[in-house]
Image (cartoon, rainbow, N blue to C red; front, side, top):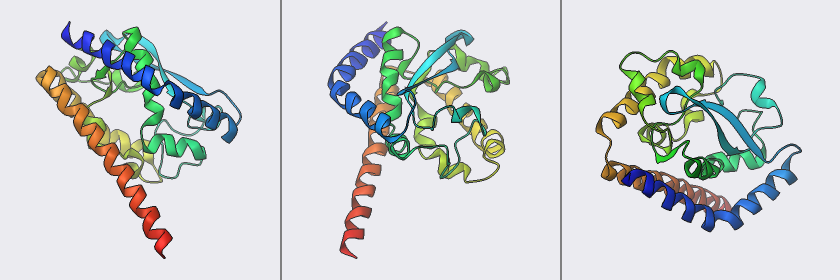
Length: 210
């Protein structure tokens, strides 16, 4: 009950504060490429029920249907604005609507494709006992997933080397979950994003000095 109340308050405040920025993001997406502003993919939710996850579109229209499920480093399907949105996790912020609807929580195991959840081991099935979240331990561990998988055989690399660790961290969260763990994950997520912003600013500054 406390978690759900927290989710609704944070999501409602977040949507209110981010609304002007969302409008600018939508305009930037439309200017950058033709096609819809939003992406609505099907994911496995709590108890294995399907739901549509809301994101700002970061790929060229219909490109998620071509290639693999995993985004490679410098993936040609990603738009210019999409690369920026992904880098700072801005594309995920529209999932605050999923939180309001009750499909997701602010913190919880990141939702996966059914192709992966049907392969869960008996231990991993507990991941589906809770609402999926916008951020979790695996999001922090693999905050630059495209860099982890590289440029070739990305689906195989993800499934063989990254997915098992992501699932281990998801199980860890489910078994150890608490309000204070959620707060810690939120703070760590904010730290990761802030460090990315500072790194980008420093890179631009160094480039201007040359």
